[in-house]
Image (cartoon, rainbow, N blue to C red; front, side, top):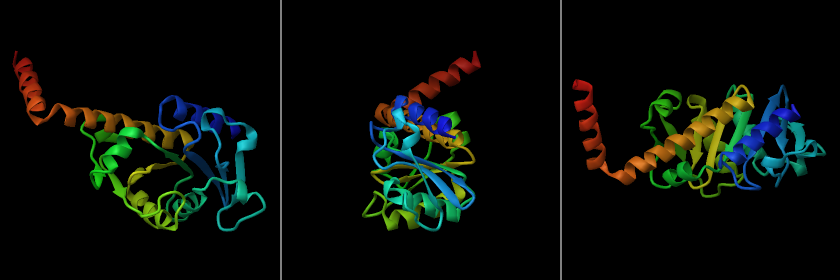
Length: 199
């Protein structure tokens, strides 16, 4: 299991989805959770950076667990997820500040994500409010954004949660670029593409 955390953590860092000490990950094992340590560098995880604790109850190791433990626990209680990945993707987080959802315009994002809800909480990091809001959003979506803070993705495996996390950021980047181009430029491009199709 450590190897899965190590590899996905490194991928998250190399993809720019987290900063040096940002983000966290967990997996559910029955009534137990394995979660990354508070302040761990996901890009350089060691076996000592994984903390096991109860889904319902704290134990001696809980003080070392990520500050987002309360949110991970709430997601596991309310969904069928077996893995949670929390990232701080720049473009997706920026878009979360200006809308109530991110709706991808690219083919892959549209197919895999369709619509990514944005929820708002006054306190964002490891808060009870985030723990109330995110599970509801993740019942019907594979990923959701906490306004101004980042994304929480779910899956059966860490790899699946990583996939939707990276897809969201790629789609958000494309959406940002399209918005930067402006509607007139996009319409002009589509008109040209239609002409080529007719030849």
